[in-house]
Image (cartoon, rainbow, N blue to C red):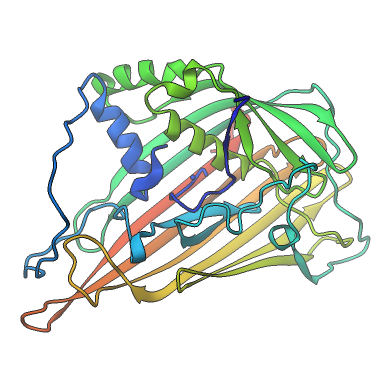
Length: 383
């Protein structure tokens, strides 16, 4: 085994950044567990016997975080795709993910890479391509702030995660560049000192972890691959690796093949039918500023999973779930470096509705998740 690969933008987690054991649906839950579980023994597994379906009580409450499973056992999640978050039903790893086909590490499937120009913008219109410089390292601070709660359920739980990493182009080719990513530092801003000391000590084990990934000349980011070593077996490894993959989605904004000028807009629409559930996402990009060196790209994203059957242990038949989300990100980019600064946020609402089998009364709960991300030069004055 030469390495361990983690597919780009897996839909099995709320990834931000970017998607951290994220299968709970919210990065915050995983980080919270890392902080509070330091020094504790793992709980013993309890044999609960075969699953049973029970009537919904009148005082039924849902998990404060997105539950780990939804319709047909799939997980409702959010992923990045081409620089913006995209929602979908998990359990279909690899479907729609922009991973590189065998034999061409810099290429991406046509369906995943397709960007459609809706307005070419003002003259002069030029092709926008990245031209990185080999062995020139850029250090960036990636900060993830997330909150999760329930509508009408009191204050949301919040958590922050900060990761400093070096990005170094190692093999520059006309169509793609192979990057090395190296963790320099991991921090948990805002965590109480008593808990932070233990958590920081645990996370410090990942300092120096190195992986590789590809960026095409158009800014499409491939999957990240890490060497299999003792760091991969450490507690919290999944959290860190997922966090890094999400961070890659903030490295650069993607560009279409056609020449574009200031004011140009392009978009990517993704629609899937997975396990009988429709998922849709639309990403819209606009070139706000441009020069020979770089510029500013703003992006918005709308995501939705229409109402569909929801199955989970203890939930009576006939329950439904639907997901919607909106987000906006701004990239300050240069064509020969990773982005200088990226910031944005995403709000996801997941609504679950159940019917009391005794009274026929419907009950609904809305679970809310908010993400705020920054990708910047350490010590940057802009906050």
